[in-house]
Length: 243
Image (cartoon, rainbow, N blue to C red; front, top):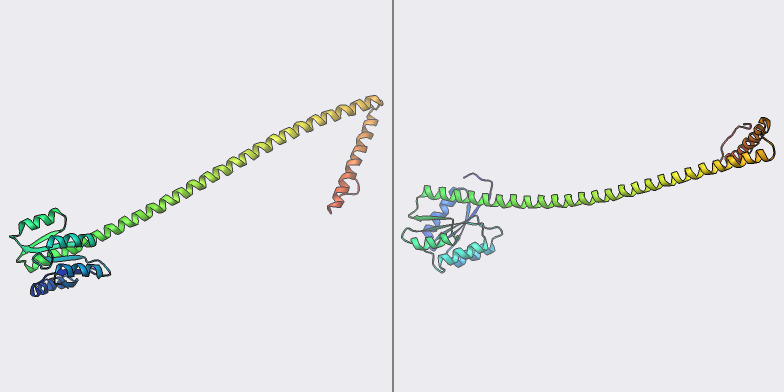
């Protein structure tokens, strides 16, 4: 089996000869193996390895621990590890119990055939790769969803802040418009009052002639010119000497 994944198989078998035969099948599919002579030794190795085993090959006749107990504890240590049981076809009830408990993924009857066993091991390792890939994709999707959620919240906060800023600007514009309208009304009223007062003064001093009016506006323009001239001089502006 050609795979980029670094698989390691745990072989639990109290018979050295059959363990070597299983190890040969594991090596032929391109995986590494670790051997344990009994159930407790197998559990100890599961605790010690840096990375979980991809697959467990258990001879159900192994001594030192009940097979179902070993399988249950192995599942608790590494739930994703694929678990195969090799046993005589006569041990049907124990196999059924293991399947019902979800302790094994596949049963391989004795005597096993090399080709069939290699195919089963290959499928088991592929199944383990799919489990890890699904977990990786799930973790990635969870991470992306969290980022999307945070980004959405950030946009919502920014949007609300922008809305508040726009509302404040709108209020300021309305206030400025209202102030301009008030100043314009005030200026209009003042202009009307000034015009009326000027007319009253002209009538009071009999200055309704064209010559008197022209003289008045000439003096007014002269006064305005002098005031602007003073303002320009204080701010370094150049104004014509005559108006």
